[in-house]
Length: 143
Image (cartoon, rainbow, N blue to C red; front, top):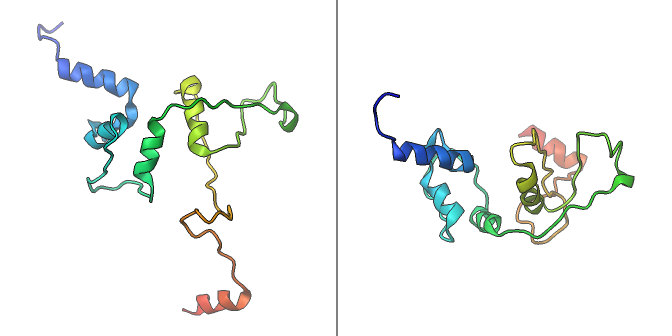
């Protein structure tokens, strides 16, 4: 002991970081992430290098809503179902991650998410058809 009283702020920040590591950026509490996690008022205005996309604020709102979904194993479609350490899960990305979070927090080494390209859905806002014929390709290459 060094005779100093407890630094309550640092102690609380350490507890918060242990429970919510995603709220910290470069070792400091990110107030916008804190507000987005515990509030309906989500607005990322602080400019810095971040991953942004259309609908990010809505995704944070959906993230806060608890899920009642469950995962259904399909042993007959699996390889070595009883002994494998790898699992293939098919489903809506955010919903599946929310289901996994409680049971597998800090236990999963890697998650690979295949984005929903080429869905054919009219509501998908990003271009997902990149087909071109040989003439179009050659025209692009000459530029």
